[in-house]
Image (cartoon, rainbow over all chains, first blue to last red; front, side, top):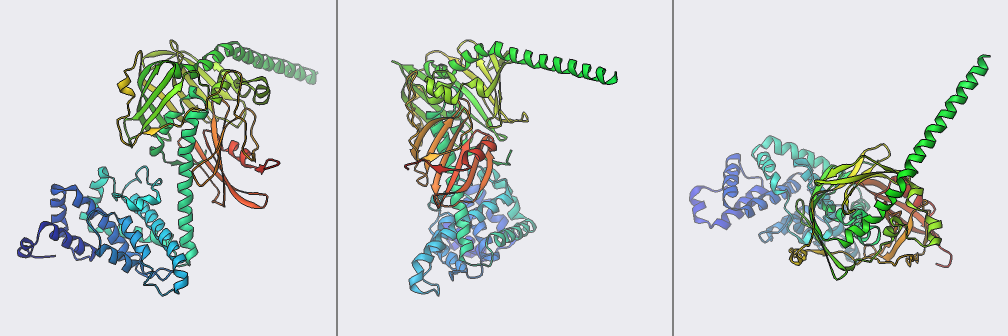
Length: 252
Length: 320
């Protein structure tokens, strides 16, 4: 990205930002990536987490949502714009929430904008949360609790990869072949959840996401109420302690 | 001649078969009074004793361990649960009367008033109760009780109950084909005074358990005031109804003393689904009631057949 003398002239944070920018623009070579990972891992975990989030955004930017969405909202440029303004430490989901809000650039008539804007926000958040979850599953088993991620996740710092599995991503990033395989798989996944159809499909994704949230809330509610209203003899409160660890099973 | 031999053999076979079934029934009935006593003592053991321990909960191949602290002072109990692995959870149950009886406890203790008793029956009407061989759990000798469902509307259980205190030390929930669906088990437990300092929550995000729904002996004030009529399998008794904060759904709870499920009803049409998380079923079905679309969701430690039955033919009570 820069030669050594230029590096010296830049502050540490400027150098990092330049790196992130280069990463997003696909201007990094193997050596630079390797060098950065080494220093990031040694220096601070914050940069490292940021790198992981950018790796995700990069996949979205370069290989996926390049076409304007069916709503006329150009997600790619919206995400790019949001990233340009990003404050350090913001999560990728927050970025996309901003992106969903940039409907003013669309060619839709003004009267439709408020309504479609809402759909776009919900749909794009749902899309990225779902896509994010699926991308994660390519790198690792989906961490417990991903399904419980609520819409409030958009305002929270959400690491892309569970810390204990960071090595997996590290290894993947160091191996371009693996990265491209994963990006292709990711592309396929995006195509699956982001078909070239109309807004109702995006709305459907959002709706399914809401249902998922609702049923998980019902589960918590059931455990809490059972602790107070069923039978103390069977110690129902014990189940509450495990609710965040539960994963879906097949029907029995 | 051949025919006569055959029918004689058949008669002998049928007679011995009936002997076998009679002896099984006798066996079950012999132990059932003792078992009933043990089941009846379980809720009070959890309420009235001071104890602290470590327990595990296994569900769907996952296991979480938690510490439990329980202290009784002046007839009021305080309980604190803290998970020690996985996501941090800290739960507090405060200032509950030790005389409190939850609806399911009343079934276990055979304390239902006559009217309800006729309606929902007793534990042994819905489960076969058998004494198993003694076991050792958390370094304590325990009775083992095998509980088999008499119909397809509940799961089976194997319980281990502490011989000295009557407290439940282990509970395994089993599917009809004998697979373990979830297991609660103490790893260590100590009885004896628990310091009040151990009942103080340590994490910022601790959660208060909702106050117990308390009932008095021989009464059951929990009247089903919900507007819904559900097709309940026998043995399940109404426990609780309220408007939940989740999607403004009506939330109802039913229990047969061992198995418990919730029913959530909210306007709108969610996709039908049915799957398990650990031993807990999550089951949603669309339902048209008086021309309006609803989704009814059943969540509980029950087989799918129970949820199918409960949700089929959902209707409003007259006057609602």
